[in-house]
Length: 302
Image 1 (cartoon, rainbow, N blue to C red):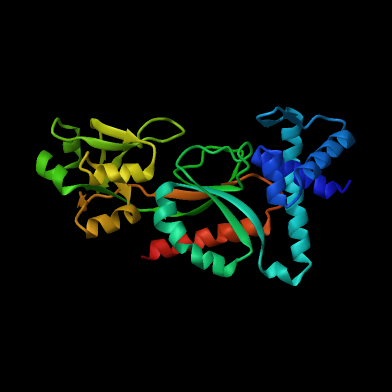
Image 2 (cartoon, rainbow, N blue to C red):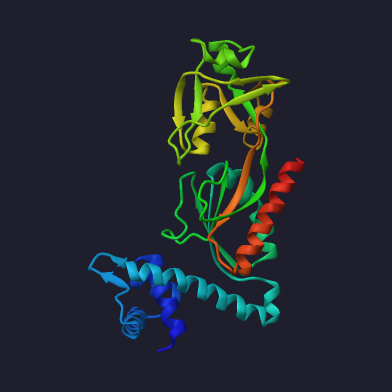
């Protein structure tokens, strides 16, 4: 038994949840993958996977072993590339999860630049605003906004998003133009709230002008947990909303959204990349994180 092939086969079965899918991605037969996993279990004298006719589940021992195997495979892959001329171009599969507006407006349009630099990296891109368990879901890193809450992860700051207050012209025609942030707490106005996945509560709003601070309180017409839906609700005239300026700029230029309270300011929203702690960070993860930092710097410069 080749232990490297066996560990690779086991890891891919865990990731795909299927011997057949694992075999396809490894360009092996299903029989070979099955035999490799069985030989690995025999060597370890531990059951790593529970198999049924419909599903493959990892056991508790298998999950613990998988976490170590993934790190070992990454180290072996990086060690091999570091000994060859190909080390200048990191390679391999990288699993990333990013917020939906950041993906559609910032990251995906810039990916041709990333692939021009690193053509041998395969990105598996998850697009969501939900909480992601990096270990259980086998994700290498996530890009998120707000303050990092999971202290078990390494969180690298990548920049700060400038926020603004906006409303659709149709909404302002119906509800009237608010003169002061406190007006949003009255009966005439409604808010659209972004609901944080980790708390289930709308994002709190504070506005500052000189020494004056206003914690905006108001009634929500709608709360959502997806950034693209949040923006769409504002454009549809559902209420007043708070947006990162990069999300609002195009819609403001097309007069689909109108900025409010431009003499007021809001605290910026920090952005970060989070990944599992490990004494060894693979080359492909390192260059991706560095590239996202550069991408955010270009965004701040616009």
